[in-house]
Amino acid sequence: MPKFQLLCDRLLQDGVINLEQIYQPGQPPTAWLELVHQPDYVQAYCGGQLTAKAQRRIGLPWSSALVKRTCTAVGGTILTAKLALQYGLACNTAGGTHHAFPDYGSGFCIFNDLAIATRVLQQQGRVGRVLVVDLDVHQGDGTAWIFAQDPSVFTFSMHCGENFPARKQTSDLDVPLATGLEDQAYLACLAHHLPDLLSQVKPDLVLYDAGVDPHREDRLGKLALTNTGLYQRDQMVLDTCVGAGYPVACVIGGGYGDRLEDLIFRHSLLHRAATAVFQRHRL
Figure: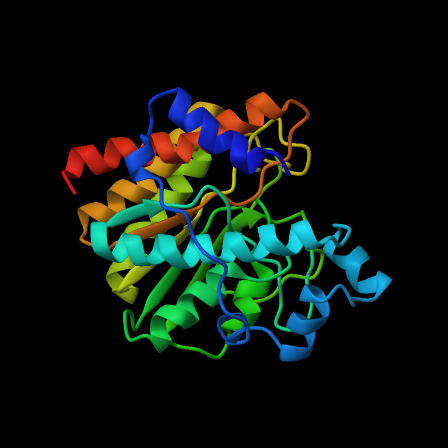
């Protein structure tokens, strides 16, 4: 839980960003959450009335502080998406809760920020077609299920095939990877798929889930990327999208490590790559 604030602190400390680049999101109105989630579920979670079984499925004990953090993170992804449309590229310091389904949470995910941001921007007429590029080590099953019948949203998930969730959903494009896959093979696979996807989908916005759990030291990962591999991955995604004229909104996704300092640095690689791409393309 502390990693979100510590990530922001690290980015400021290392001069990756400055205070003028930080935007503070508000909590989204309930009506925005209910564009994706069932009203009974939203009310039960926000009111602390989920059953013990439902809380176990999420994996996080309920608290009013967690409700505030969860909703603020969703607000952050919505704001990040709007900023991406304005500037061409923007990053959240949280987000990526892709295991949340309309009527339940799962895998540390309570509300699906990627889906909610998509629906809010579509409702406001800011975007039509959206491409979700999900490179978290776990399949984005909730996102895939939510948009399964929606041709306006293309879901792409490149994940470890033998990892959570045990029961996969069907994304528009799923690329299951072998356990232990290393940097070069991973990057080659991504380079094979991403440019064609952009040409095929022609999205108004790309939502990029940059989970760092493909790292070789991640406790829940099962892949074998290095810090260099993660950075090259993020640069590839951002350079490819921005270079082709597609705005990108980024969320940090999953990451689970024994040393918090190392984990925060891994998450910071997204923002370091984004800063380099932003400057290179002079957005």
